[in-house]
Length: 307
Image 1 (cartoon, helix red, strand yellow):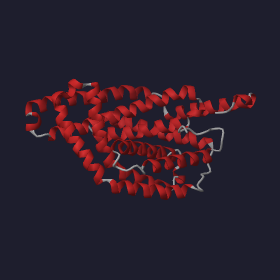
Image 2 (tube, rainbow, N blue to C red; image 1 turned 90 degrees about the vertical axis):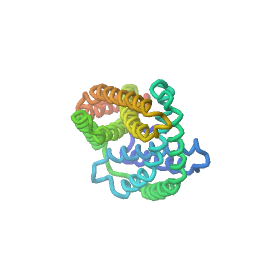
Image 3 (cartoon, rainbow, N blue to C red; image 1 turned 30 degrees about the horizontal axis):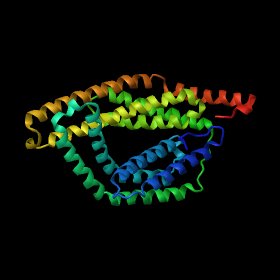
């Protein structure tokens, strides 16, 4: 099912339902073995996406309700999978660059591909135990979620959305103020991704309108993720031995990558200015009014269904 709360039902029950679905999905994905290389890489990627959705959903709750027995297993599973997924993401970045901007990599592509593929293969075997750690953490979480259902109302959901939007806006402001600080940009990426998922969860308030807003927030998060991957790729280029590439060609490639890296960040700030143009309180108030209007319409015309 879609990652959306059915807003005409009990909010606590709906949040619990979504969390159980995502945890069950992650557990199924992590049952794939490394022998099926392509399926394994896809499974790790999709499992991490499920974990991110769980964390975003929990952060809609008032902080006092996001108990450690829910938060800690998600953190443990995420940490266990992070190194493996980061290596895979580099390989995907290289493939994307070669497809979209082949001139950017030029003759360096074979040497980079060989190096990164070797790193990914080694990581997949080295981190098999980490997958088991992640599965154990999620199995414990699944047990906790069996009878868990927070007592919350819609007003608390709107406040959770406001908090998430404010976190993303502050992170964007900090990143713009210190553009040379990679950690600040990376924090903006995480906060933006979380905010996009929270808005997606509440998009039943007016799906036709909010789908586009969710898509733009996700696009911004992807841009910031690609920016991060380009930065890591530059580290690998610098480490290439001269006999694999040649010093002049390596320096030329580094210059092109730095230019693409800087342009991507500038594009992200341009899009971010639009995404963050609406203050967090105004956004949350607007979504609440969408929901109230839909509910009022359903009361008058119940045959039309509900949001």
